[in-house]
Image (cartoon, rainbow, N blue to C red; front, top):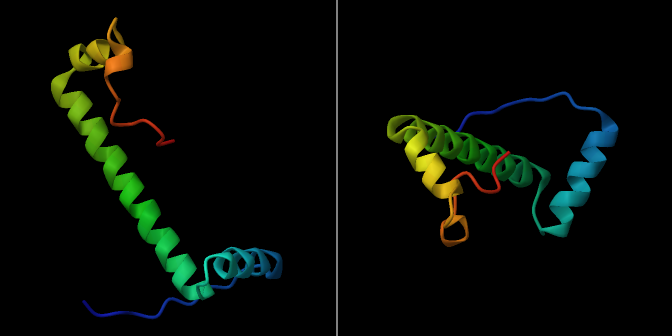
Length: 81
């Protein structure tokens, strides 16, 4: 897998916050931003997959997950905004 350069112009205050977040994790700003983008991309693809699964199985699966045994089940979309 090759790499490509992406150039961004960002506010100095945002860059300072990114530096702080990256430093807490012992990372460079570039690595921190790349990891954040990768995580966001994964979260979006996962949410889309969950939505498609719910659409495929219909409201019966959603109702079962929210029914009397809701404590026994973990909804796939839990924790995804």
